[in-house]
Amino acid sequence: MSTTRRALLLGGGGAAVAGAAGLTGRRLWLDREPAALPAVDRSGHLLWQNWSATEHAYPATRLAPTGADEAAHMLRMATGPVRTVGAGHSFTGLVPTDATLVSLDRMTGVLGHDPATLQASVAAGTRLYDLGPALAAIGQAMPNLPDINKQSLAGGTQTGTHGTGHGLTAVHGGIVEFDLATPRGEVLTCSATQNSEVFDAARVGLGAFGIVTRMTLQNQPLTRVKKVTSLRHRDDLMLGWDDLVGKHRNVEFYVIPFSRWGQLITHDDTHEPIRPRGPDTDTDGQMQLKQARDIFEFAGSLRAWALDRAIAGMPEQIAIDEGWKLLSNERSVRNREIEYHVPRETQIAALREVVEAVERYRSDVFIPIEVRAIAPDAAWLSPFYGRESGSIAVHTFYKDDYQFFFTLIEPILRRHGGRPHWGKLNSLTYADFAALYPRWKEALAVRDHLDPEAKLLNPYLRRVLRRG
Image (cartoon, rainbow, N blue to C red; front, side, top):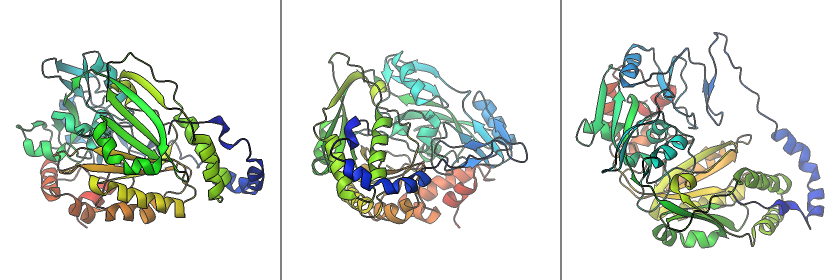
């Protein structure tokens, strides 16, 4: 949430604040910084840790190939489990290995482009925040971008990372070709007409089919968009969601827990003059919501009152610029997240249940609940395979408990037919995924052919991709 007001807890609330002072010690104890892990283990191996500190490892070997042939050779010779890492922004156990960790940081940049087809060949380790300006320099733009742009292109597409918008697919929907280095030491070029089964199975492949080293992306002409951020009553947002999805190029909203408010964000093509976005206020806004939580955690009506005073009457914010500058945001408040993608027709019903559960049982939650829309695609392991989807994401502060994701939130989203984001926290195993994905067994048959020794499977992926 990017909107903030310094007066959130000021004026008229002195008595309430004084009454809540007894909770200060409890909150200080809960807010203590988690203990840091050793930087080096007993064998002298360096720590790897993901962004959210939910996963870590001390890999014995670290590799950083510069191209596809080198990656294939390294993969053939390496000791497994071999896992590939981009920005380390996934919350799940996709990366940890005590054997071989492969970084794509030496494979970056736009390698070539075709101005007639608006396609660009991009090295798979390129970070999305670098890709936006690089494509803009050749007059191209990705059709859509995720909420943050810290991920590598390979990491984002291999986990089904997505943005939002009517008729707009997740990032991997724009891939028309990719090169895959396999554990056999081969480099396969995969597209709809060449190694097509690998193309369908490994486009969202969790790094379990091989190492994606290069992609050709179908882009669009560089355009200017208008971003409008406004506060609305959350019930109005839920009731009008279908109309909003149909009306705007990109649209999402956030439910602000323990208030009657939500934040609407829309992007639409425009020819209006540039109006650069202002300074980022997301961190400040979330910390204000945390402050309200800390003081009024056990006084729901006072919390709602404080939030209503802070939010009511706040003006909308408008920015106009090239899309790559506006579609992604800074999200510097470290958190843990569960996100599921349900059929669009059940999204709002599922959201209402999630919000009700959070507000009934989890007064510690303060980060807004995120709601987006994603078009279907044909990648066999895509969470959006074959259906229009609506995403619902619940977050917690990184110092707070998140086990309720699995006991309270996940059962609701599963009951509504949800498929989890591959990079976000979930408790599913092989049997669960097999029931959710129509081409599951076909995809895994392709995977086993490419990696017969299961060199690419760490303990987490064995639980997900191997029966029993």
